[in-house]
Length: 61
Figure 1 (cartoon, rainbow, N blue to C red):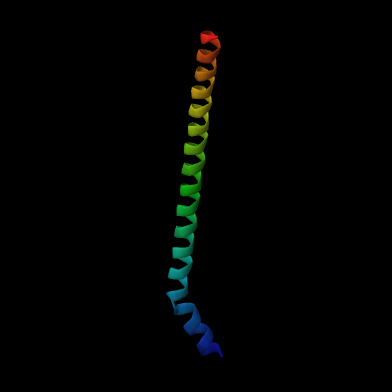
Figure 2: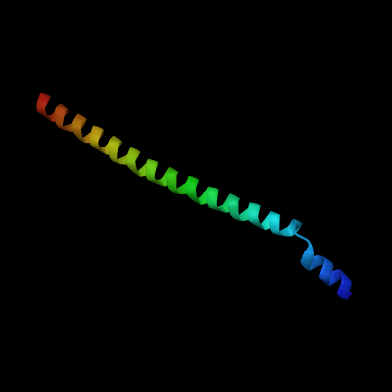
């Protein structure tokens, strides 16, 4: 039993899986942050265009 525990502690395959998991989680957070920022900027731009079109339409009437 002690020998198996020592072998488990020395084994590094599990550590690489954890590292890959953390890397994937970090990339996912970065992608979600970028999408959130781009979405906010696009929403602001569309609102500006809609407001300008509304102003133009009111001036023509």
